[in-house]
Length: 162
Ligand code: S3P
Image (cartoon, rainbow, N blue to C red; front, side, top):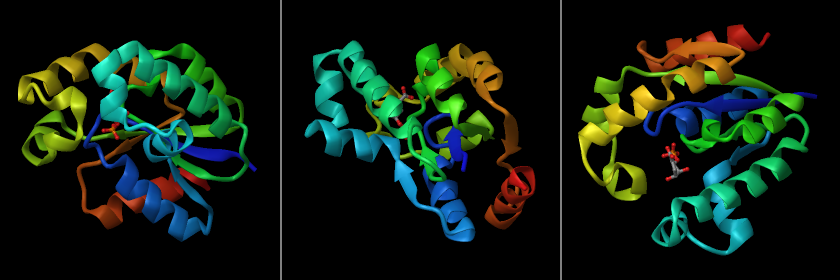
């Protein structure tokens, strides 16, 4: 059975909707960032303190492993699309859903403390979005518009999957 993979900007709702979707579909849920920390025995912040490359290498290892699973719901880190190997691995046995949330909503909402790349403030969020917009779209099988109520967004996702 194919995995369901959620991609999108930090703060777009990947983890929230990933959990909701896993409950609805009765499938296991894995947050790739949590899984990475567990598997590597290190926090994401500590990887970034070393270098972004150190983090991206660990992310690639993690994604390769998760992509081999069957029938799980995976919420990915926002930068997963930066490496095409990740997208190729995830696509092999997965349906990729982009959670598309207006960047203004993200800026108003997101908790920057726990997100190393966003520590530099809101401008960084806009920059990241501009940088990644195309990669998100090109990587997605389905684009989910996250502007409605949570119920509407979940409804869109369920409809898209079936
Ligand atoms: C990152 C997003 C984070 C995490 C890491 C890098 C990014 O995940 O993987 O800090 O490059 O956008 P979230 O999207 O869950 O915040």
